[in-house]
Image: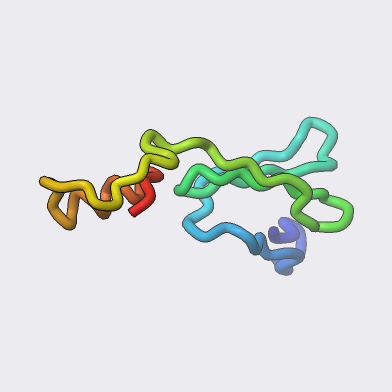
Length: 87
């Protein structure tokens, strides 16, 4: 977070594990939400600069167990894991 008047860095978002793609302030300016490429949304209190809420969007294969699955290439297994499967 940068001060537009001075150019000073006021605060750095820490908590995402992938690129942050979107940030948005609440209408009253009291909260900021940030979303990363993995679909994780973090809610930040603008008074304390603390993360107060984490939301993870379910991925298409969330929780699907592929341990012991046959007929899948390593690339297919990796893709399924990226989409939420458990190897």
